[in-house]
Image 1 (cartoon, rainbow, N blue to C red):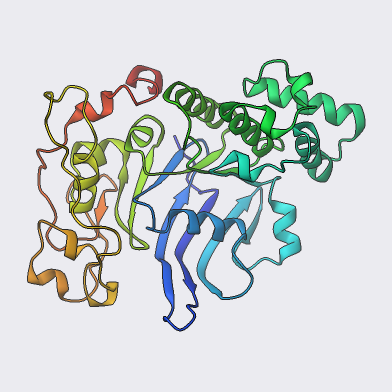
Image 2 (cartoon, one colour; image 1 turned 90 degrees about the horizontal axis):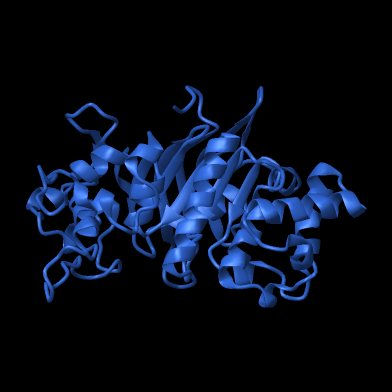
Length: 355
């Protein structure tokens, strides 16, 4: 169970990029969520919905110019609180790696190609834990062993290109957990990995959350990953959360047409041969401004004129299970989704293991 006080509370986060001659771009528009100890919170949506920009804003890694960040993101460590969006660059550097860590999407571009893996891991240990020399090297080898990299002492001397994709991703995870951070962000950590390695990486993340009590923010477009790993889910579209719910209610009874579309487009192994997929029509560029109505309206099969009567509010579902949606014409008892999604082979772990 999560703690009553969240480790990270994000309120009305907004990120606006200043366009050159084309107006501003509002990539994140009033997103709110919390991260609790020992729980996994998911940010789900298509590419371009604002997931990665949200993570970069929380980590303080957005460009210093041409971008405006609003809202708050309060990190609680012990008896102290700090708004990540208001800290100086120096204080953010002190927090990154020690209390707040991130696993990036592409390990090959995230790791320095001309520096051995061992030096990249020990740099974090020296910076935040004061370890040097043989002590830092021993701890680095232990970290690589812990994340499942064979022969870790030899791997410390190797460069990123000498490791497989799965090993590089594990090295990033080792760097992220080196100082036992309270909050960890994983941005599409299984992209470009084969299915077997994906399962191993997700199982590793789940074990880290359970053993260390870390709060994990999982950013993904893969609903199989969400079903097997996340406790709470936020579905984003055009920079706003359109549906939020715990895992079970979201899969059992999705209410926003966008969520229903995402679930309905998942390939099913038990579907008859030749049965076509049911994709969401259009693309993420086919939207309207939230101030004019629901941004998803141009792609929505449940569209009515009420959808254009100003921005829809995020309202709580009648079920009373922390389920909320941003829709004036929500879907009721969608028959395109059933519990078989939760039992998909792409899901890591089963219900008995999670109990």
